[in-house]
Image 1 (tube, one colour):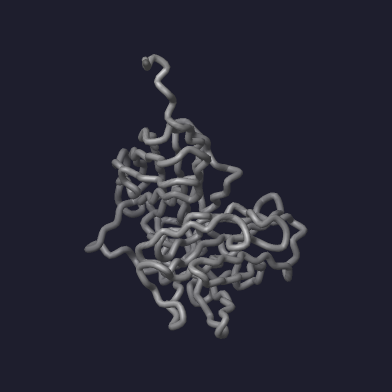
Image 2: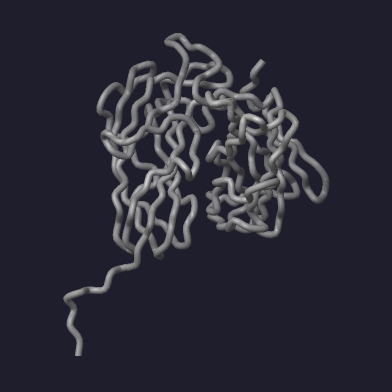
Length: 311
């Protein structure tokens, strides 16, 4: 039987001082690694795994940064790598504060065995964690469709587009291979447009109804830096969607919004987008239903003024 609750998804974290069980949906502060504003550790988090229609398998992965304010950069290499095989599996190199659910997926071939493992090793602020991922039955999740049927059917993730008629993204399946492509110029704001559709349904680990006294937006967006050589500044990293249709629980919904992003240095960047539905972060503990996507941006240096004069 599939298990999608926090209690059913546990990962073993190897520490220098011993071992501790860490929940995939809630990672508890540890005495050896308490949260702090700066200088704390970052732990990879295994949300679960699922089968794909083509026979391949995907691991859904997030992380927990015990830094409550600091954003930490860890480039691909000895301090941020997968093994065995290719060390770069599309993981972030820029880490945001606190818990980040299902930020990306790593897909393995259909021949990948049930007892095989891949390991993500991450060192931040001098503290190293190596977390294994394998297809254990208790970790099997269904992030594209809720396991429990509500009064109005099964919940599914929001559908996100970056152009009115552009490609659609649904489910937590962010990977650089599927990123949309943009270009920008250093210090010049680049517009990011979003369209979102959702079924208005929601999931929780307890199947509890939404509290009408604490209404939530049908879809919420979080935009962040994922990789890149310089500072990234958003005019609004949590842009509020304008309601185009619907807006209440169990009512079909559409929304649209725009934000801007400014890059501090030239180079290649990846931006990350998370779209949560009524369920909230991590699917309200159900590992369904949110959507992730990546935006690949080639940022050029400021062009010299071709008409500018000189002595």
